Length: 315
Ligand code: FES
Image (tube, rainbow, N blue to C red; front, side):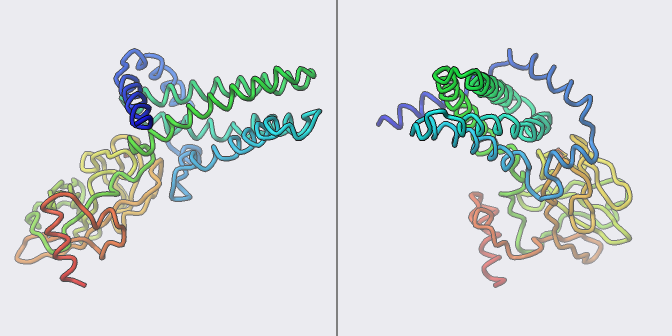
């Protein structure tokens, strides 16, 4: 019962936050400043984690959090009277925060609406926590141990609240998640278009069951990839085609048409591709492989259910 009450209160709070349009002004200002120095390119790719296949921010927050938590642990256990070790750990945590800040800023700059508002509060809490840990380190350096311990405890509470909001962004709002993760393309061939309507410079959007698919000719072959950008769900058919790649209209990620691989970030995950065949001038598509992912194999829609049955019959 207590858990239910806390959960309801927290949900109510975060819902109000997501709808707080008053946060849009400050959020937009910080993001437009960020976008002024952070253009699509190598630095943006690095901060997004494009080369590693997953967003970089979640892993980079572990280091400062671990260092701060270790300093806090030493305080709680009172392991050392002079608390030098705790001070050093907190100082190292303050330095290790920079990559986490930069990657978080980069990810946040690509959000909109509710995610952008929650991200602003997430960032604000983290800045507050950093200020507390910095004042803790300074107080300890001046031998004001008690003030340092109090500031560390407050910093841990603040960074935990920030972490909860970060979790909400990822697990409830899907920031950083491959937006095609739950797409279930048909397992059996489905007729989607006339072959003559597929050009080599204008993407054609079609529906394959419940999945939006982009068709294009690449080196005289018709290729099909998911139309929903894996980064934040941008409509790729509104993008541009150049040198065997499609560029997303939202944040400029590029995907190779031949295999869906990421040619340029900020996307970190490739676009799902579909098998294509042409019969009597009609384009047919189907899922490329038997899907190993459990969530994709347990779709909720009727169309997907029929896909799953067909999938079983293919095995
Ligand atoms: S939605 Fe961000 S690059 Fe496509």
